[in-house]
Image (tube, rainbow, N blue to C red; front, top):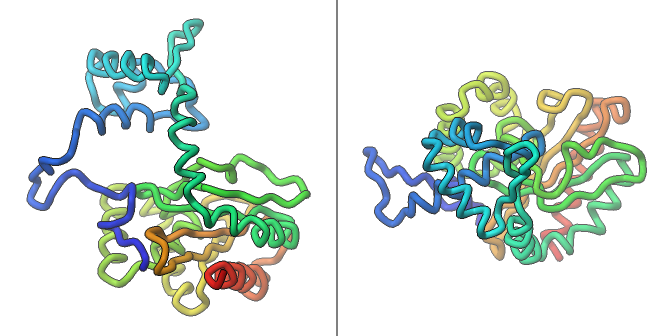
Length: 270
């Protein structure tokens, strides 16, 4: 059954109702992982002061975490600039997780076929806290920017058709709780994308897919569809992204959206 905000991996909040902290939550481990989460495709090199500012930790505390993570191979130093980057141990840790998702292999042929048809990109994602992370991508042979569609890339759940599809697929109370969490913790994104999310929830209820007309990624259209199966402990999401110089906005509704829905239904039957 679909994952809910309370049960979805990567959605855990260590703070319990009433402000009490979960006694089972290892805060030191979480803070070390927060160091690793600071790195992005745009910020591949970060120094002590930058990591301290992003995590809210003191510089001496960050230094101890950096030392430990470097010794374990999760960070490596660039001595020329006095900063750090992610180390190979991060990739070694992530690959077994990707390999465990059998749906990736099963979905590849259908994803490649749809990507070639629409001359765009078809991707598969899953939830990571309040973000969506790509776990598989198929690109057409035509040139299309890879900056927004590569395995491991993330974007805010509230900003895209794929993320909206996840939110829309949640049950009533679970969806309300998730939307409220997004609204409270991401106020800037909420002001920018909240109305589009509300529209897409209604759109999904009528059509089975969500749409984006370039709100998050100017110059590109996209459609998103969730995939929840009783045999899966995750709700996965699929999207199809095309340049806005290709299909018209109306074709998202009459062609690409229904094709993506059909692709997902076909995967559910395999």
